[in-house]
Length: 448
Image (cartoon, rainbow, N blue to C red; front, side, top):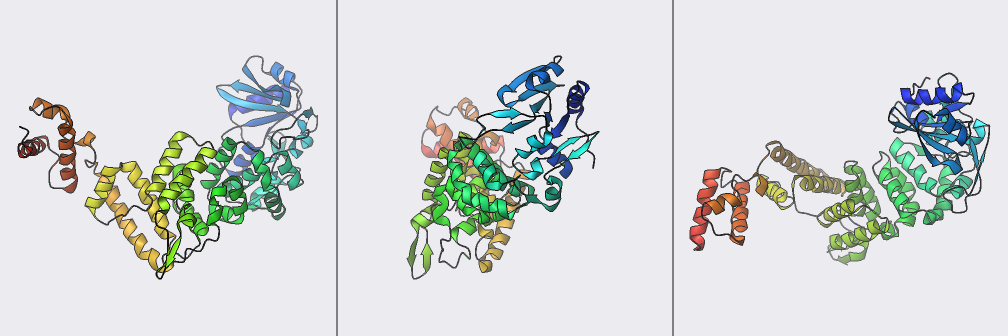
């Protein structure tokens, strides 16, 4: 096994080793390189102390990222490289960051403080892999395992609980039994973690390949950070439309939409209102108005997690309209695009397809087939670049004003009426035809 670091990273290693210090690439970049994926960041660890690191990079831009924790960032050929002194972490009073650190000359001491075995490997092109905690074996087996005592690792940093789940979801790995047990036991530590960090980890987790089994196994952890969702767990829908309880239906919908953050969040929250709106009669269970309650829960949950405003508004829109009725006709599909826009229509349809795909077995096949046909119609509209908005209408308000139409709200009303006819296919999107129709409308209204 050989890893070839980018040239700037190799220069950083050379600068440190030429000065007499040991240096390795470490952590996630080693893990990703061994998996054959391109690392996002390249981090180094070294026996050099922070001030000695700065001396080694006097000719480069150096950022004192965290000198008290031994971290310096050197910018080489525009690439920032984080370089950290071997260290042993002290106590973690806040369950997030060490109160103090002690620098050490032993690489194995530094690797011992890391979260998971697959992140506790170091590498140098001339010396090969340093792997005292058998991270390579776990990487090959697809296992997320804490370094040392799992409970102690989570006590040090509660966010590691979500990180373990996120890595399992994104990498499509299993979580080792002893690590999984500690996740359940220590989940309360997540209350010590900032909302922003929880939101970031959950977003990555939701977009992973293994999101369904992870959230199925660790539902209690999810409910610790999103208690609004706990009522969905094992909630029997008591209707022939569904074969899963609300929570499992939700997980299948998450898995069924593309791994785009707004879609995955919308899928997670789309039925959160069901337990609060349940009624039952001789026909079974009903959830009248659940979309409205789901929107309220989605807004409350995402605000609590400090979601960005754009994501919040988009998720609320998708949740509000997730039960939109789709008819298998070009005209109706076009009207939905007209009502929203192409991107929103595509996202709503993706959510709809996943939703019907997670219904009862005897219903889903026909529903999915129809949804597939609707998707083809929507794709055809997009490919044809059809006129679905006033921006593409071959007649403008200025055209109408120049033709003698009186200024006022009638201009907008006329253009919208023309657009509706174009979408319905009763009027071509051509300037002369549109102007003639507009003049006819003007005469009919008696405003001429």
